[in-house]
Length: 499
Image (cartoon, rainbow, N blue to C red; front, top):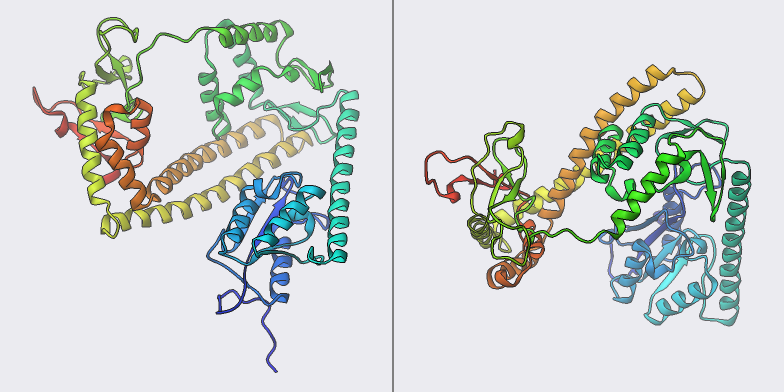
């Protein structure tokens, strides 16, 4: 008698097809026997599928697996990105059910979990577990499942209570809890030490912002260069509001003096708060509507974006609107591209995109090539994210060595600078690969719909809507200087996406 294989992954006629759902509340580099890693969960769920005589459907999710990483069990199953998508496939009849490692991976809420199980059962699907039997069709099975869900809820609430008690205890001792703000590093003894690579920049950012000499965007750009990863303006906004930098710790509104070194004086911090409050209540500036080419068209010489320029008032309620565009880097010495008219540029870019859309019909070689490039870009982005993750881990290792005095500050600063240079390069390549994957992954129907919008409703679209439609086809456009007086704009436009 032939031994049955561990798991069939090739769909066969009559075999129920399943997907696997994985959930981890907080990854954070954890390991050990008590940590249910995605690999452990997948292995257990595969065994559950095999025991039911089913097959893993590799055509859905990520090779049959739907991931919810850093997602709490209190989140309703249907509201989770991974499991919610898998359950929609069950309701649609695409798959027979979902396999999990144990019931806590499905839900840690008693009433909500039961409702989801009943909904899936009503749709003709099922949820199977490697650790227990899930059966709500019989009174005893329903009782056992309810008890297990209640036990999961109890474990969740107990863990939450312990975390709150730990946070309160650390706060009472003047120690930070939760994520450590940038500018500090763990000191290995439960506290934090000043990060020599970022501390001075954080201090300067507060001082300069209080003086009104820098913007939040400028601070975010500076931190992006130093950290080697994108630091968005919203992160800077929260950073400027955090009293932790004054040497204080806060928990549920209770503020007290902490044990860590302050990077900002209280006077500077208060001045920053006054400026933030003033900016919040300031009226909007008078400005003209943004052209759809803003940030989309660049100077061929310096590769910097063109800005709107023109004579007369900048108020939107006047007829004297800026009608031209100029290179934004001319003050730094760029020869520029003259002052082409906005309307003429928009007309030529629109005509080019419509011609491109006509070539990107379903079944055409150009569309197939575009989609193949998107597939390669997704693969490249995945590999690059893995490299970035390793480099980020090496930053933490360097910080640990500094905290234990194994590495001096000079060595740490040199190591961090080198790692950040590599991270900046990798992150730039990740952004480009993700853009290529998104742009090339659009279907022929999606592109045709956008082209119809551009062709028929262009005059009724807002600048933002026009730009969004154009971005489905192109990333940016280069404009070269005139080779001779009166050279048509169409001859000066270059589309790197087609080169």
